Amino acid sequence: MFHIHVERVLEKDIETVFEAIADHARYDRFSGVSKSVLIEEGKDEKNGTGALRVIGAGKLELTERITRFERPNRMDYRIEKSSPFRVQHTKGEIVLKPEGEKTRVIWISEGAVQVPLVGGMMDRLAERSFSKAFSSLLKAIERI
Image (cartoon, rainbow, N blue to C red):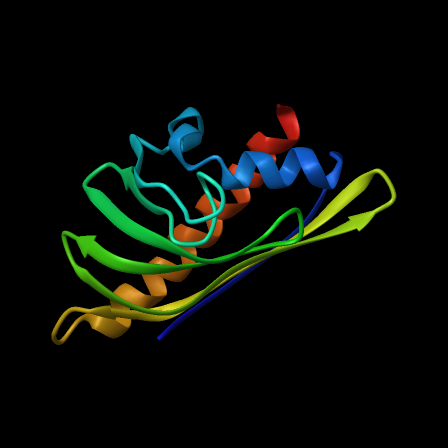
């Protein structure tokens, strides 16, 4: 199993941070993201609950469904499909808390890479890679 927990206080207001995180179709503006497509709009909002997006980083492609969308404090998601390897995703949540003019972001992702024999090693690699990617994305949001 992989357990990713990234927490950072950004020098931006909560509305700006939430909008940048929720705007699925524009993730490709972030370093390392090569593909970002909104496949299905959400029920109440374009990027809200039910929205389906595809995010690509090099050969890795993740299809994610938004499962909870509470503007501007929370967005949960689940990886429904992945390639070139399968991921069993059990938790994906992004929680935002205002701290004056700043915003605390807590990004948690848990699951397991489903590759026979080397899944455990892939989980550790996923923890390092995704922690770095989430941190990088948050730093980029701060520069917007």
